[in-house]
Image 1 (tube, one colour):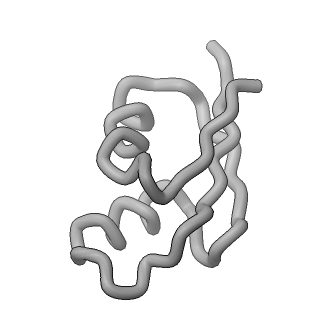
Image 2: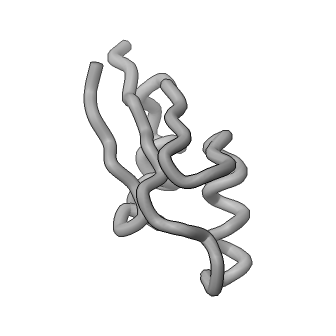
Length: 59
């Protein structure tokens, strides 16, 4: 299975609680923080919910 490199590029300040919780669930904390996750349907769903705040790259 492939991996995804996910980077938070926009702030969570002023966002809905649901969006902030999704960012935390992905393991992102600050702007420009990066995590690597397996490419699963669950992770893809979280990415789709907050795609405007992220940069996603396949590894």
